[in-house]
Image (cartoon, rainbow, N blue to C red; front, top):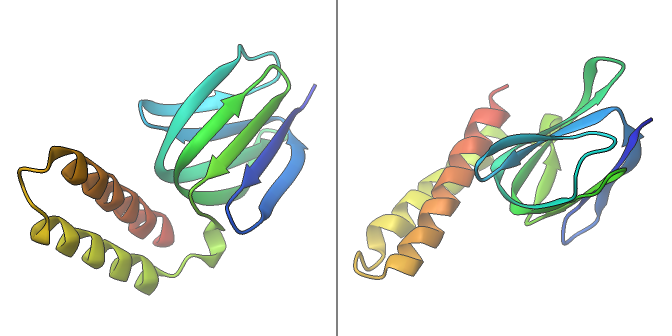
Length: 134
């Protein structure tokens, strides 16, 4: 029995299909969406979503944060942004990382909520740089 996976970014629906399993980058660690899974809502960190069919990874997508909603037979990923891994540009990813690190350096160190958001952006950009190099 497959699980239906939808990966949706603000721009478009990237994926809407059935797979054997999807591995999703949660804030607390990677988690698998498989048929029969207990319902769960999950915050995403920047990282790679792996779609599995027939025991192999068939597709990979980079997501830069967002949410995932797991149901018994479906997984909906609402990503802040999402890109097919093969389409990532190492140069663009490095530029985003440099910009995020510069924003941290310029930000008020006493503004903890702002610092938290900026650090999440740095983490996501670092994950994108790593993913783009794969």
